[in-house]
Figure 1 (cartoon, rainbow, N blue to C red):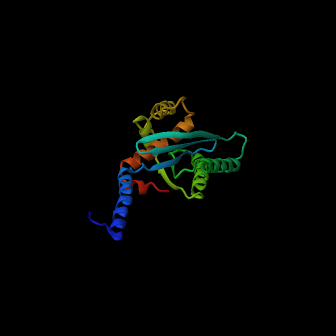
Figure 2: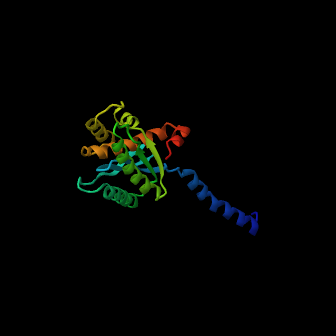
Figure 3: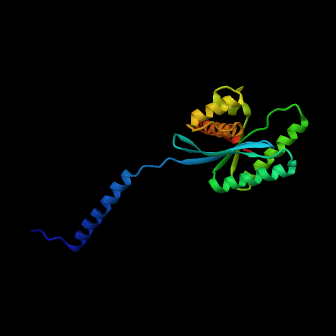
Length: 201
């Protein structure tokens, strides 16, 4: 019978020890990347917000709501409330990115200023937590949700409920925020790196 030297025995044991590790490595599959977006439809009195998460091809609504400010609250107070409540949402749900609807065209100069300040409060809340922010035009948002850019709010809410398999129809402003999130993911799926960069705020 052939004798096995100590060095040969050590080599055999080492090769056997490595074999299970190799098999385990071959069976390991890459987990899909997960992105969680804070989507916002800014307004002074009723700011819609939503948290959407995408894992692989699966898109789901984690939470959504409306920041409602009473008519008697001064504009400055509304801005504080918007920022504070969005900060609370960010801390609770830890989004990785933010998507916001861009300012719509309005004929009233005063209305444009009010919408701009509300949007600024949203941007500050996201920026101070290090979130990359991307903006989408209102027509793009409706296009993503309904398939056309001139949809009414109730149509958007109905379609959002169906697309995300929600148990109930979300409030109109929250539905708009959910649509913003969907628009963001659709844009990312298109793989348009230059287009995505151009939307960065």
